[in-house]
Length: 150
Image (cartoon, rainbow, N blue to C red):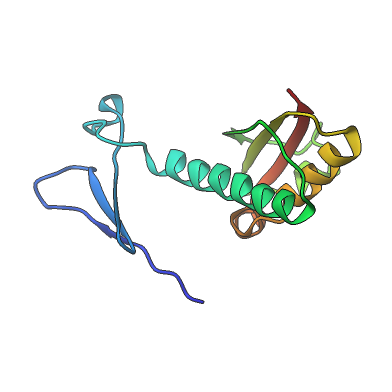
């Protein structure tokens, strides 16, 4: 099923963009320090939020099918871009993700609160990487994940 989102930038605004996603309206903007008005998260934060939400929903669907219960699930996602002048000192995995002299890394920390055992926690970690947004982003970004019990 194809999905479509429309970004609309009014000519009177520098970066503040209305995003129409189906029946929903969101605002994305840049911080004041970058010339925006800070009326919404910047596009990178929106993408990270989408990844975080997708992971939580994928885990929920899986745990419901398994009949597992957790009290709370936190998925923290952060990113950085590192300029790479030389690939010396990089791991083989990191070398595979250097594009145009930059290494983009996304780190996901999944914390599961509740009475799940270590095998269940590890399985949840495996399932997390199967969310559609993770798969979509995983081509040019080095994804790192930590799974832990809260």
